[in-house]
Picture 1 (tube, helix red, strand yellow):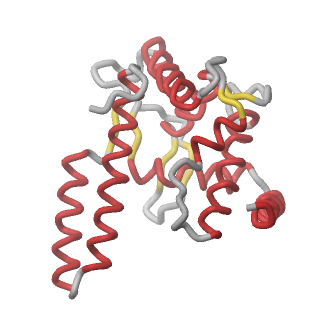
Picture 2: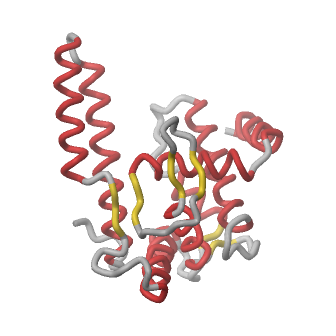
Length: 210
């Protein structure tokens, strides 16, 4: 396991996410290079096998019960603290807008087209606003605390997808994140908490500036 923050719960979650991301990228490259349908089928069979090895779910409660409210809140806070440590570059214990944007866009490179860059900046900005102002522990202080990140993860815990891949909040908390649900959670938040007009205006602004 890669040591990212020395907070075990957070580091395990990030390693789980990174393994899935690396597998997805590797599989896409292999599919593009495949010569025929049989080759693609073999690649996808291997993909699903490795997905199972990594695990479709991440259980941040591990040996603790999600019904233990004290332990549950402690683990959520550990996730929040890990987010702050991994993003806070000036050491003030908070994540500013600038720090958040830098961390969210760090994977962009010169090979990315403009639409990808604009979309990444737009989504990152809106996600920052939601975590800072739109969730349970949000305080609108223009910086994100560990407690605000913990609220984000608590909402992710209750998020699920139906058979048509439509997301909704269940008000049920089991301490587990599903990899597909985690991928759809940010679009769900933006679609439900940000107006289309606001989204379009911000995206157009970034399109002009970047």
